[in-house]
Amino acid sequence: MARPRKAGAEDLASIVDIFYESHGDAGKLKCSLLAEYAVSLGMDVKAYDFRRNSAVRRRIDDIQSAADERLNRGLLAYRNLDADSFIAKNATKTELKAALLELDSYWRGVFERSVNFAGENTKLLSKIYALKRDASETSASVDALIAELSEKRKVENALIAENRYLRTALERYLYPAVANEILLRERVLKQADTEVADIAMSELADESPPLSLSAATEQDRQTLSRSGALLERMKAQIQCAEEEYLQRTLEEYMASLGSLTDEEKQELYEWVASGKSVHDNPYFFSDERGFPLGFIEAYRANMDMCENPSRYFDLDSAEPDDDFDNEEIPF
Image 1 (cartoon, helix red, strand yellow):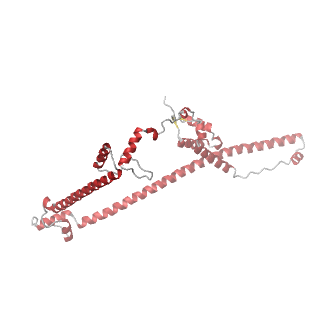
Image 2 (cartoon, one colour; image 1 turned 120 degrees about the vertical axis):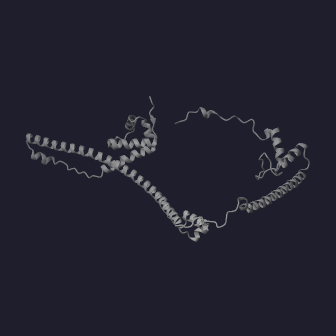
Image 3 (cartoon, helix red, strand yellow; image 1 turned 180 degrees about the vertical axis):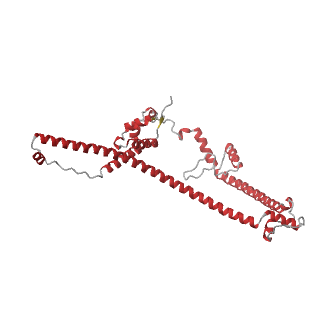
């Protein structure tokens, strides 16, 4: 057997609306009754799902407030019974009994009509609420349709303008007419039924035969060859300048450090040979100002960190407390 599906916030709000429309009594909007109604629809909903959802609670409060406001708009008046006058007019037991029965019958009728009016009023309020909701949805649909119509009108106007341009181009530059004119000038045709404007012939037809592919692209190839040669020369000059700069900074850097071990020299040479600066390092070490350390300074710091980790890390610190994983979450 399939498990009932779990309702979301929108589903809960929809259940409130449908329940109110079908029952017509805002006073029956209770979480327990709503949950029973949702279960009858095949949903896995509990009463606390409605109670804990703030949006659903606001929806229920709005419906009940609107219903109470409409019910309290009417003005009710009540006139007290003049007991002395009533007894004076009905002095005997028989007259008093008859008058009381008539009065009871009258107020029973008033009560029954009031109950009927209250039921009709509740139904009308429910219908008004449903109509307002439908009107809101219809208004949203109208806005969406207006936006869609506006976009379609833009597309239609663009197509009309494009069609107008294409019709004008066909009227001015009709290709069969141009072909017939060329054949007529070449004396292939003796007579043509169409006439072509001179501007159309100049724009759409070449008087001289076309050049070969190699001849047409010769100038472009020469330009590309000159540009390529110049670019290679520039690359060579830049590479030479970079190598000279790296060599000069290497000599100055080594002179500023003084003595270096053979291992440090080997590492430094390999670093510079890869195109890197002596004022940078592969360990991402930086000074207190945030600038990268020089290669040898960073290399020595890295070696000292590996040999003496206790200087840089607190190895005796306690393990993180895992008691939180065993705590019960209070919700």
